[in-house]
Length: 424
Image (cartoon, rainbow, N blue to C red; front, side):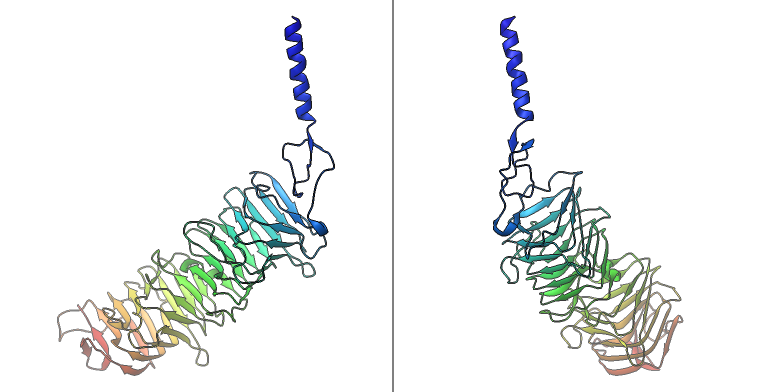
């Protein structure tokens, strides 16, 4: 019996000792001990009160973490790509300095909420004040709380977070819900905002992006989420549109005039699928080699500029035939309209008209300047054998101008308009 009593006493003493384990319990200290239950006053902080964040500090799912403004020029330092599985709240006025290759990675169970006030902006910056000094903010989370508002993000765009080599000051992965508003993003070695994956619900509003590689690199389906802001002073001032996945636009959208062009990347085409796409006056869309804009059945395009502010569809290379065309396939929507626009440099091989019509789609084309086209202005197919074709009865074409229309492929033309060709 004595042996068992001694063993019981040892166990109790061990439990009591574990419960009373002393150490640094402040998670913002450099020597934070997660196993400590009682603070022993040993917590250490960097000189000047700056706190170096432990790399595993935000990993616990279901936990809320708050970083407060300590009133210092730099409040916190991060020297790794910190995984955030909890809810990370960053208070107004906080300044976080990231070392080389460091950043925040917000994963499925986590969220980030960084909302500045007018007198207390939040700042994410690099220790080294050079492009690419740190990785950036990577968000792969469906949490509706994800929000960056009024945040200054500078010197990011360094090392990638994943094997896909996605880079940018803010990287938004597939399936993410996030709002990025009123932010100032500068000096990224890559993109200001990188959002090219499927199934995201994002809002990009009134951001200022400058001195980056390109301000925005995005999936075509998210263009309608971009409004306001300023995007000049970058290496290339374009909203770069990825078409690797087919360039599908599945949500009704309005493309705003952001005062810089949209540029369609080689690899696919823009495809409007079962929705309406509206393009506002002054918008410029630049197409790289092999790209096109395709309006599919049950879809529509309304691209209506003004006489003083036309819409422009053009080629990046600035040469005839440097991109394909605008295609209308089957669509019978009364909304289809291109007016007060310029269509130029289209007509790549196998794209037989600047505007290609398949199966008599319904379109109103007026006050459009067609110029430097290697093929025809209009291509109408499928039609009967040569010599007995009739023009698309659902096309309204008025007050258009044709300058240097080549028809280099010698298609049959309409007797009343040599810029109108037939196919079968």
